[in-house]
Length: 217
Image 1: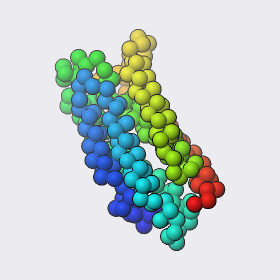
Image 2: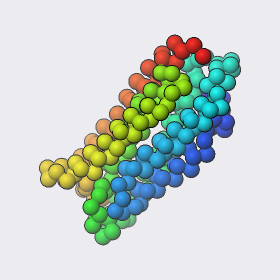
Image 3: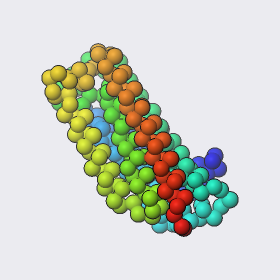
Image 4: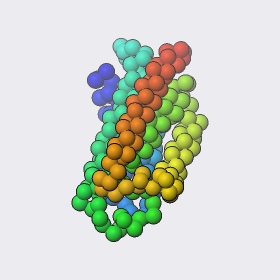
């Protein structure tokens, strides 16, 4: 599996997969729907799948002395590494905003979603959706990726819309808390985001392995 992951990172990956990790720094932007940064890193991973398909990477990997299911697991491992790198780079500005800049007017007067633990929870939901909807959809055929990606785009921007809208409901305004205010609520939503990411990814990978093993390459 380690060798497959190295192959994915060195041979199959599009440079955009690495470049778009930097969009995690969008967490610093005021007056911008920062959840969109999660979509961009997924777009970078999509480019890797597109590049791999055009170069017949799946067929090439299947000719190697590896289990068919490990081909799928290698793709998931690559995406999870990219997602975790993006998440860490996203979390750093969030923690800075929750501490050093918690009272900064440029963020306090922001009409859009605040960067806090709730935001990080929503980031994990979007990344989990990419694994569930796009990667899982891709491995139904190991060739077609347009429909799964369009479905992911719809799902991702629905999550962005929900994240931006929920805290405008008076009873849910605490979701946009600054600093460590309402920290129990923030931590609860963050924990829920972790659970969604893990469950979506595990379920998707298990199903993708079964689907791919039935495909006659």
